[in-house]
Image 1 (cartoon, rainbow, N blue to C red):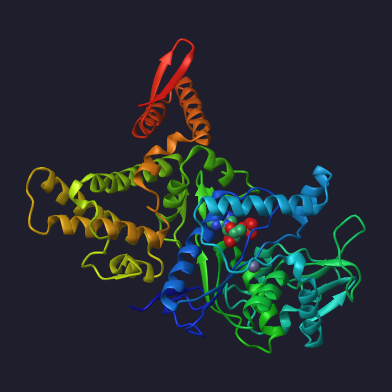
Image 2 (image 1 turned 180 degrees about the vertical axis):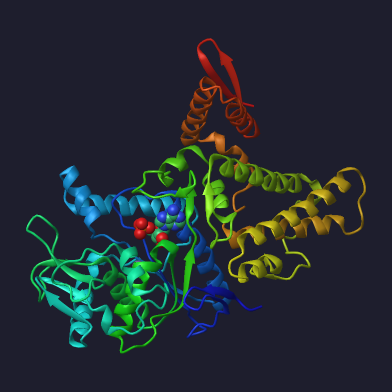
Length: 479
Ligand code: AMP
Ligand code: ZN
């Protein structure tokens, strides 16, 4: 089967053929660590993590870099507000980011370069750009000269006037062209800075990714990915910098962009304030349901985030884990082999599921295939428990169970035992989650939102948590 990916550079679905079939390379723009990330930020890391795992299965190897942006004006601002050094902010939120990603089952990169550890490479790249006539120093800044790169705009396909408007570039008097962007800027004594040929200063955001991609993956990489909001100016500028620093050699062969996660109808974004932090969501919802929700839409489509989306994912997982639990309960299944079924498989993953992912990461289709396997398993199990046992029924049920768990591997789902999934109320951390849901239900009731309060009661009931309304408030117990 061929892997096809939608390449933003060509606006086409293309077969993916890496430069080195023994080890493709992939770079995904990482977070700026000045706060907890929101669930929209998690979308690229979840979906491109699914791609990373797929590439590892197909090619046996992958070099995947996902950076940490740890120098940025937003970080400086947060540090100043809190009266702490920037590393106090960046260290704390880089750790929190890794914890959040790991809770969501996000596939880890092979390298996680930090911008502040690549200042010499950044300075060297800027020097090369100046030497090649692609950048110039002006008033302690260094700017990239967009007129010097013929291909400028080839990714976002905008005309120069639109690009300028989109970038909201500050038109400083020292810029030769208003679209020129900053590679290096001066730092006052109270700001983080490094010595450089242009005085003490710090890098612009775009050059960091170009320098880190070069340092860890070489001049030409196979896949570069990130959210569609980064297409312009960030990715356009990365292309300009890298291709000019590398004598015109192509920077990234396939550009992949995820659609935006919306909340309340508009893009979830820190600047708008309509965010739900992963850190907070994890306290009230099973992490696997958040992951399922993110994978329920195709990665290039927008996805509307909502409470009901999460509830739907919880219900779907309840059903799938319920099927697994029912299959495990069949006495004859104990001790029989875990071989996957006659559905051909790769690494235990049924090929129908693998084929869906190889079709430009069609996760909704992969989930539909999983649902179909589960439906077949439930129907066969019903026949068996009603005494209608065919000679190969038990073997088939065993195969379907292996297919279900195998399919889950591809998406990072269904890897707990049913007991763990349903027993998720058993831990102490979960008591807080249950209490938070009960509080939310009380608030919903007070606001006469009975649909919501009933939905919470039902959700808790499926987890085996029973509520009792008493004059002292709501009490709960496990069934
Ligand atoms: P940032 O830290 O803002 O650079 O964002 C980190 C990653 O999250 C980038 O790949 C962004 O494109 C992506 N991103 C930011 N907001 C959203 C959103 N609402 N939906 C999906 N992806 C997003
Ligand atoms: Zn980047």
